[in-house]
Image (cartoon, rainbow, N blue to C red; front, top):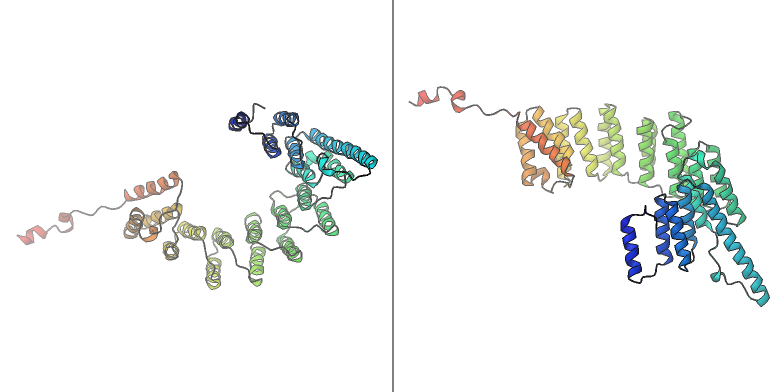
Length: 419
């Protein structure tokens, strides 16, 4: 066992052996996979030898874990050698079985053969290559695909997604489009992951070619069209990825609004995080008219908003010193039975103190202390340092609160008049 394996795993392994528990192929595969993910190829090979010596024969998942581990660790030649080793073992065993079956005039019993190379093993290699910088894979991607072709292994959706990802990351858009066309020819249907990969390539920072806002709009709508053409359900995650990318990476509000309009036209429920992204964008651009218009649209749609949305609205209004609207959204949040986050509430008490609204300042602090009012549903579970920051802010502002003047200073003649 390699010294770099986690001590806890070694302890579990030793206790299994002590208790007479015989490791299964799944157990061996888990250990091989663990070493591979830790890039401990030496330990991985030691486990492989131990497995063979124990009489357990590897299945396709064990082979896949071994190939993937080698390639993820950058030992590409050794990884390809493992593919070649598996193919040779199976081919030789199959030929012998065919020869014996021919003599006996029976069929080959495939259950008695070693694991046959298949798509699982191919994907182990391809996904490992896809996780590495594209330029380091140029000399090995072709041979891996040729290896699969020589064994009549057909790529599946996982294979194609990995290949498309590799092509786009290396800037080869044409190859990615060719792969999509090939998928269509061989009747492999793209899935949500396929289009997520394409979307990420559109919005990846530092892309070789920067699209104009109009081109971004066209490309995004084309992706949506492809999704619908292939009968793939467009999830809130996909729409969120689109809108987030258009706003945060390309400042393309027009295209983002077009995506939102597309959702509404399809009668789809808009997830709260999409509205949060749009609101954040408008506040950053100081476009308060757009904020008001979007809020009116949200109210008309009856969308159920989440705590993140309200927290951001409170924080953004605090940032632009609009205390009245800040408090309106705090009240709206409370009316919906949602508890504000500590950072949002910290912004509230700080702003109230800054404008000298000590009555509402004290009310908010009392609500939190007593678990009433805005805190009647209980404050949100947060790290201790976040909670401490709130109370530190309260203490700092309280120290600035004007103290009541003494009775004599307010009514200097009161005692004389009484006499």
